[in-house]
Structure formats: C-alpha cells, structure tokens
Amino acid sequence: MLSVLGASANLKIAVLHPLLGDLAQQVGGDRVTVTDLLGPNGDPHHFEPTPAQLRQAGSLDLVLACGVGLEADLPTLRSLLPPATPLFEVGSTLPTIEGSCADPSHDHSTHQHGKDPHWWHSVEQVRRAVTSLETEFTRLDPDGQKTYHDRALAYRQTLDALDRWVRREVARIPRDRRILATSHAAFGYFCHEHEFQQVAVQGLTREQMPDAQTLAKTFSQLRSQHVRVIFPEKGNNPATLQALVQDGGLQLGPALDADGTHSASFEAMMRSNVAAIRQTLTTAPH
Image 1: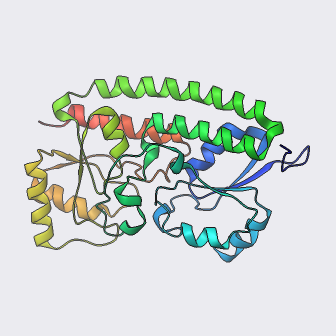
Image 2 (image 1 turned 135 degrees about the vertical axis):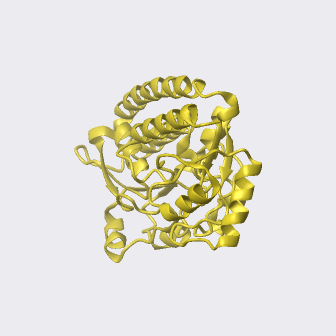
Image 3 (image 1 turned 120 degrees about the vertical axis):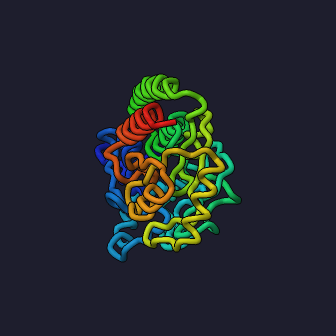
C-alpha cells in the first residue's frame, strides 16, 4: 500500500475532543500534526463545526471522534467532510457498557442504544484506543509503521504504570464507601472497572437551579442509596449541588473532570480524578 503522504509530510489530524488529541500525539509524535476543534472547556456533546473549520477539512488526512453517540452533530459533520477525508470513531473499536446520561441538557437520542459514550474513564479502554490509533495511522501512513508501533508500545507501558497506581489508590477506599455520586452518569467505565456504585443525581442540569420539589426528590434518592458525598463536575453549576449540601447534610467533594475537557492530558485527568475520589471517600464522615 502506498502512503497518502509525501516523504516529509505529516498526517494532518483534527480531533473532536482534547483527550483524542493527547492520544494522537502520543502515538504519532513528529509524524502527526494535531488540531483540536473542540478547544479547552468545550462540550463534546454539543460540538458544531464553524465555517472556518469546515473549510480547513479539505486539507485534513483524518478526523478523530470519540463516537458511541457522544457527538450529537457527527452525522452532519460526516456529510460535510470531503469524501477523501475519513472520520474515525475511536469508540466504535472498543467494547462498550450499558449506561444512561442523567443530565437533561445532553441529547440522549445520540447515545447508541443506551451505550455509555464516556469510555475515556477507563485506563484499559484508553489502552485499546491507542492500539486502534496505531492501526489507523499505519493504514494512512505505512511508512510510519515503526514510529507508530514503537510509540504506541511505549505509551501502553505508561498506561500500565498508571493502571497500577489507580488500583493502589482505589484499594485504599473501603468497599462500603465506593459510591460515586456525580451530576450525570459519566463515570460508568471507571465504576465498572473498580466495583463502585455509580449514582447519577437526577434532575440537575449545567445551567438551571431545580425547584424545591426536585431538590427534595433528589435528596430522598441520595439518602436511599446511602450517598454521603456528591462530586461536582468541572463546568457545571455549583449552586445546584450547594443547595443539596446545605439542605441535606451532604458533603460536597472536589470537582471532577467528567467530560475530559478540563485536563492537559489523559494521565493528568485520571490522576486528578482518582486522587480526589480516594482522598474524599476515605476521609468523609460515615
């Protein structure tokens, strides 16, 4: 197979999520040029390409998406891309778990048959994603096969070390305290992998303050599930959770990066989230 690139050209890659940009750079190194279309603190659920980004698409070799229905406008974007520009849904190459998103501001219709699209909260899933990227990059740029193979291998070793650290941290949390309550069900893969009970706080949106009836119903739900700590999410409205804390006697934990758009890298996101969860759940009143 002939390479789609010249001898000195890079794969020009656009990503719809900053963590995909991190993974693409880890695997591709100097052979790829990565552009993040979402930008820092963006909402991957509601990404809409700008006219300037669409004009740029003609010069791209590849567009990377998380997939599994995360990006609501992906079918539209696919139809607008030049036929020669592949759109690769990384999540479509990974095993998925059932899940639901409890945040009404998210478009449930785009999530594939109830599949959880937040696969980046699992080190094992990211390890598989790295292998998928290695395969796709090599398909487009066979001359770079050794570079992609060597870099993917090295990064998987980094992920192995990260996974060992995560498991050591989780092991410090008593099993009866492994209840992760957040404002929407974004941590399903983490909870599945580490035997946590996931509690998505119903009726909370990123923008609006729920009424007293909704707050009372939410508090009743949390009490029935033995929740003592609620973790806000970076980018959400903290006033909503503050009301639950004040009225319900719950503890407010540190904000977690649920969408993965508030961290410099996958490893930084995972270490920050896990450290916050471990520290809070091991010290919270029981």
